[in-house]
Image (tube, rainbow, N blue to C red; front, side):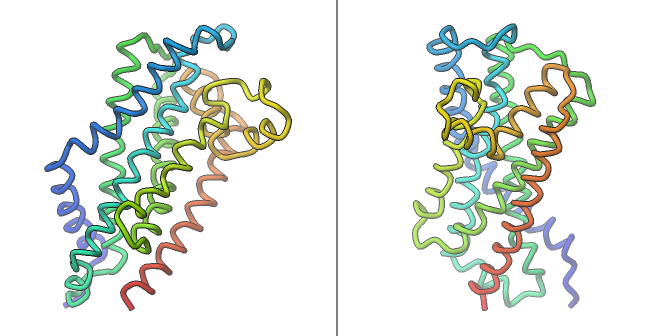
Length: 253
């Protein structure tokens, strides 16, 4: 029987989606921490941070969205690790199934689960006063950047999901990614940071993404920040995908 990669991926994605829908608490949990951070910064610290004419909630929301995604991919790594430990990969090897389909099923499930978490966070932001002057094309641009960022982090998550020795180890890698937006333009202007920290904040991928999303949500052209964000995401995505496939071949060889 000939393997059909797209059909295999669709079937395997349905399987992983069933696991997610049976434990929706993981999606809710993913959204709880970013919502808590958003409320903390808006109502506790926001009054002390000068963001000019832009309301602080609008200013910090792009960073919260990135933190939401970084929180969600920890579950992707844990689900993949659990599959490996259950022996499901070994059983699938005896079937004419495309190897890449096993990973893409988890990647697509991650995309959907993170989309739901992002919607929850956006709804809370709207409830406490977030307003956007973005048009339909700008919102499509925001959705595209968030999708690309999710894909990038998910393929990074695949690597520890395949190589970790414990489920805690599989998900722990996400903690540095969760904190990366804190050392960026997410919550305070980088101009307020000391020299070395400012240099790092202004030249890391989260800042380019945050600035691009912030401009799009405010109805302004994203410009060079959007191009830089695309370069960062595509570059890291290609490397992560390559390492993930190498790790998979070593794991199941």
